[in-house]
Length: 345
Image 1 (cartoon, rainbow, N blue to C red):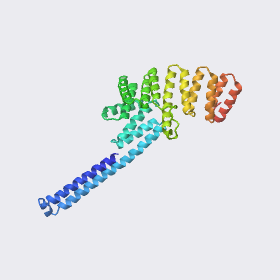
Image 2: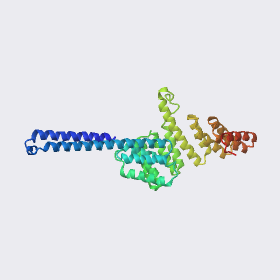
Image 3: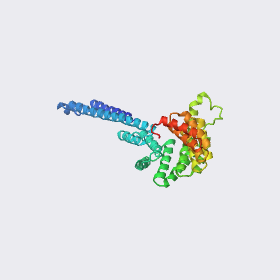
Image 4: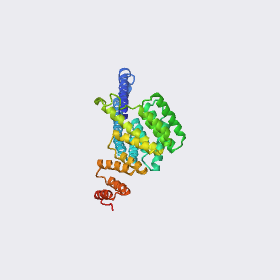
């Protein structure tokens, strides 16, 4: 932290002052004895040292207080990110950096999370501010001795700039993704970010290829150690990666007008986590658009079993049964929806 480095510098500074005083008292006492004869030398030295100590302690106190305030805003920013309040997150990060502009960790987390936020915030003004900040970050802090994940973050930043500024940045991102993949081909984060990079350019076929490659580097259910109790944390992390990869693949297949394959990807997600309600809705919507009403009803009913107090599932089933001309079932779900939401007519 910054406060530690300032404290360390201060200690060395006062050690240096003490050394000078020792030298003065040992070797220069007679040379400058005329000051002492005036009766002022020691008083002046004490006052000067007291002033320097007071100033140093005050400076350190301010820095430490500002560091604590910066940490406070940093944790508020992290909370805002988790709660998907991205504009609040942006403001809190700026406050943290204003109070402690030397803290690299704040800046790195800020860049990473504002990149993620761009997909969820519709404000054009917000996007302009974010992209401008990212551009300044890359310009002012060009990669010299960054680690693997810092290079990955810069590749993601270039990809975002290609989407919101000019497409030439896409090529710069592509070069870094290729370099990172060549150096460490077993890192799933590169495949995931690279796949998103192609999705942003609507190059869904390339995205599918990269995402499929990414899945191959993750542990497989057929591996003998996969279900070992000692491997549970790694298995959970692997399954989180797999869910994110299959979600991106499902999106790509939907964009390529391949609903059957998109459904397969969504079903794989449910095999890892059967409690993701949005996935049931996505599958039901695909079946509905494919005019497979019975399958759409099936997945809405499964979601309803997991979330019976949400009137929307009842209302969805009302519309589906009504379209299927099963009026008694439609009426049953409509009554249940009204019971949960009195505003429905």
